[in-house]
Length: 526
Image (cartoon, rainbow, N blue to C red; front, side, top):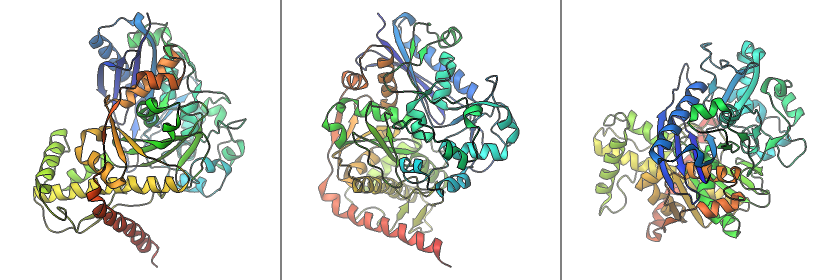
């Protein structure tokens, strides 16, 4: 009986695969690193064939560990970062790099080379921007495509396909160039609630009148709960599966995580009072509603993106876990930010805080916008700020700065939630997933700083779980995303906010907002 699911998650630095049963139990998982190239400042590139090979290795290893036959797998799903893959008319890798190397064919999601193009598109005021928060981020695909056409015209001339990374993976898996509604609504300014979904006049404003031809784009997209088709024979052989396996539409990784943690409350009113926080290298806050609620500086609302007939809105931080790594790396007492070093710092922060009245670093304040502010300011030019530094280069000094950086990340999430609430959203519960569930400081702060109940899923791999849920529907194991979400949800552990700490964090938040204003004043000063 085909009732097992395979999920593949492509993150910033690795490909992960998980094998699940129909109830959402994770039977096995495997992980392989992927290459990244940094040829210039603000440029980051992948090799898409390296990504596919890593995904195949991870699937084979996870299947071997799970000990199940390929004949028991109903479907496979893929999620990925919103990286841009370029292929020529024959489907071969096409360089996106100033180095000219063909294997560097993918612009990584956090690459900010197209910041000027994002500013240009944001200034147009086009109606599609109403569904991306009134502006565009350089992390989205239209600015990246503008940059490619302008700076690498030879690549543009040879182009036959441009894929969001998740769509590239389903293309490799099936041979079908069909695009997922999840990816194109979120990153390509496709309006799923309109016909046609593509806006030709917006393409013209971007100078991309030939995008349909160069990108291999169609007016039709594949929505949630559907199948992209079955595995091709070459892909089945490479993955260690068979050609009876259905392939789910690709998903943006953060949205797969949102599906994984909110699936259990889907299909009812609780979905609209819950928000998903997917914390890793960056952080994403994702919410769903039945009615569109556009809001400036938020990504979305996107229609029919994960749950049928629902709208998704997203806020987020471009650097969260990456910021903590940066703090560890740049401090005199730090070093390479390994898991062990993070754990050592977290443990020492706990010792310093034990019995300490008034906090361990009351005069240290941080703005976490070291890689711009994705939301709620929608300012990719924003920079980080640290106020209150001394000559302290000790390990304890690093721990105090690390703690206050954690506080700033949580304050940034509060800032996002407050702005989202101003647009009519109402949240009672914060469902947290991703790497941040392994940082007890952040979990504590998410509850205490936001004043909301935090739920940590029993299945810590909610991104993989959400992708498996999508696969379950594509493979007919469950009838709908709502049914899959509820059937495969494993519950979670709740953490309530400590109300005694609220006054101190309210004061920190007022200082946080004051620092935002002061930064703007300094930047605008003549």
